[in-house]
Image 1: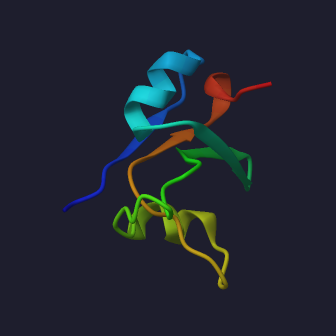
Image 2: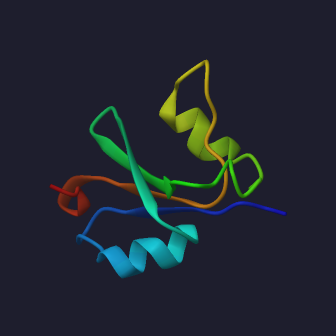
Image 3: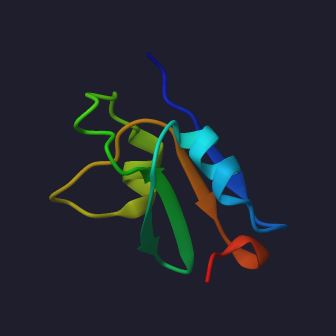
Length: 78
């Protein structure tokens, strides 16, 4: 199963939009002026590795699984 990484920079998405895009409750991962939104329970649900989001995150000891949303600029959540 292929994972999807969506990039948003022009407007803040709603909670419902984010939950729909990642397929569950959201978790915010901070990185280099961006926020990566992932499914909080993605590993418990055994979702596949998201190589693109994991590489963007840049953490060597953990991975991102499932679909992810990358927020930047005007889309960053408070």
